[in-house]
Image 1 (cartoon, one colour):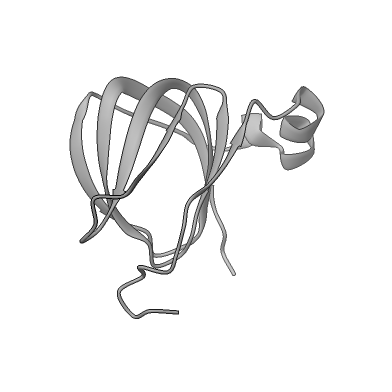
Image 2: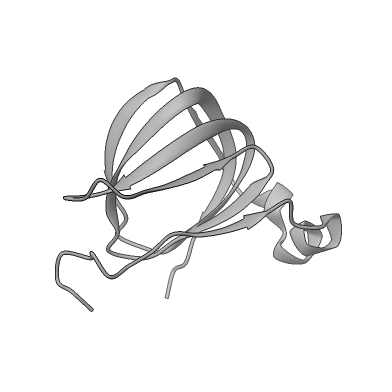
Length: 100
């Protein structure tokens, strides 16, 4: 793995089933939201989140490549990932950090 995290990628699962969300316990996770705007982020732990609403383009640090996700997507962001979130529609999400 590269030190700058450029080999890391965001995994997006679109419209996971209700049973998958129940299995993960998504509705017991904390909630977080943000308004539209650009936010530089660094993930010190793996984060899994489920977007209730919103639209995001996550640009990998130092790159023009981006991953898009939004309402109804289950997203896994790897530990060490650095990116800028370009939020076009305000985000409301459930999230969980992997403590390992």
